[in-house]
Image (cartoon, rainbow, N blue to C red; front, top):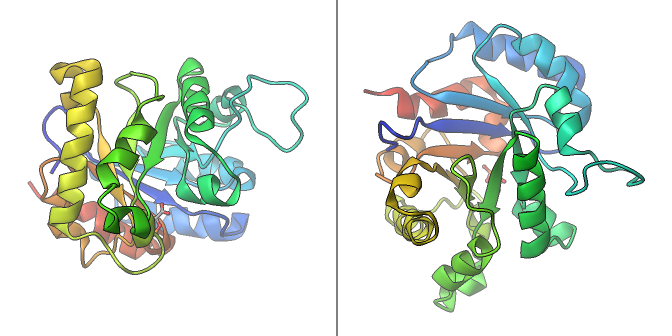
Length: 250
Ligand code: PGA
């Protein structure tokens, strides 16, 4: 459970899904349930939906973010999108280094760190995804992988980490609360070593990987789990809302 220093953040990673009309309908349904102030709610649509979602969320407390960005500030980079363009489109957050980008687009730790720096330089909060594969976990290398992924990242209190074990993403196999808590507490200890206890206590670490309304409450109860990055279950606004509520309990 997040602490007073860390307001829970629950983010919907829609991935490459939904049309503008579907996104607008989704936002109406989500807003109809009100927005609990104890939890920061974030939608992460793909680029062509950003304008529609900004309009649909106008006047609400729900934040907007993007799923990726270029490390470059601008110029001849066909197909890429810069941090400044995302800020201009109304974004406050951006995912960096989602495992689908690392795996399908060959993004390495250095590129992910460059993206996180570019985000921070423009005033966006990066949500940097880290996590081990099934093979790495079985080989006892989970913490080594997390340490390696963390190492090149900028030290900044605005940076949000998302622990997303690869074997849990889109598989229906969630990390148990104990397994996730171990990884989160390890990540917090690494943050402490890098930035000091005070800053580490303020940084949020989200869990992602097959989060559902059914498994969210037990995960949300863990001390170092400060929110969720939700894929599949976030596509239904009612299920997403139920996941948000797992943190809204006093
Ligand atoms: P999932 O995706 O909830 O569908 O497992 C999480 C993510 O990829 O961010």
